[in-house]
Image (tube, rainbow, N blue to C red; front, side):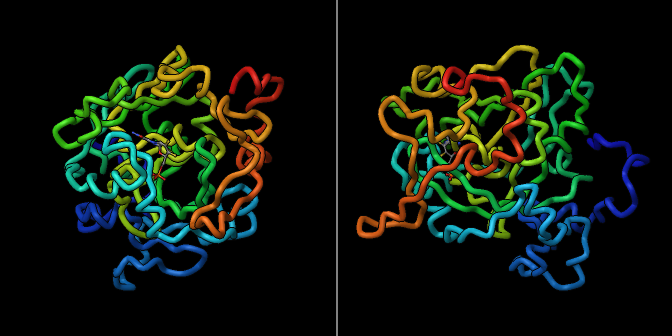
Length: 325
Ligand code: MTE
């Protein structure tokens, strides 16, 4: 099911079938160039010039917030210290149990205020949009942080393909509900009303920083990090970056979101990283940048909008950020 009409796609963007069918490479961003160097995808040079080629890092892209030169968190930490309550509440649970998840085939339902609703195989949603590498800070509301090299497509490009109607004011995202594979969803102790849900205001969704990730570190997204398709919103607390998405719905009204429903006094809809507004139970002024240890806590100051103030502050002009936390 092709969404973009072939006539709309420049020849340079059409994915040859042999590459299109190689889903694994597609999800990992095979042929991507990162900072001018080929990522370790194991592909031969002949395939490096595929449509999945990304632009090399330039000062102009860094100014857009697409890259940071801060030290990247090692892959091992990114893939072993996770929050993914569908697999348990311990940081090590997702890496231990997410293997049970079937991610291929994967389809995404598109509903609500769009001209092109439907249920799309994930490959079709990605086709015709160049994968890009983004090196973002991720700041969890629990006051730890990482720097992660993601691969994905900007959400605004996907939305352009789906054609939101003029009534679309918000984007709602839903995670897979499959208790037989997600042990946290069948746990008697879980307090979450599954499936996990998140949402963004339309202008937040359209911001060039907002990414739909399919990979990280030049590889397919590990299951514990939200394979095969997750949101990454780098200026918001990590819980907004919903994993393993199966539904995208465009709405007129602000969607319900999991954490706001669970503890509205602690987690707001906006959840912008803000060192001046503390969580009711802890300060948000500092964060522990991973990797760290008891002896080297690697404590750094948290920045307004997680350091993306220049790119996103205008979205909240005139808003009381203490009220809309
Ligand atoms: N998405 C789902 N479906 N379930 C979750 O429990 N946890 C969130 C977010 N997305 C979560 C989720 C939280 S609290 C954080 S901090 C990030 O995922 C963590 O992403 P990472 O494990 O890839 O670092």
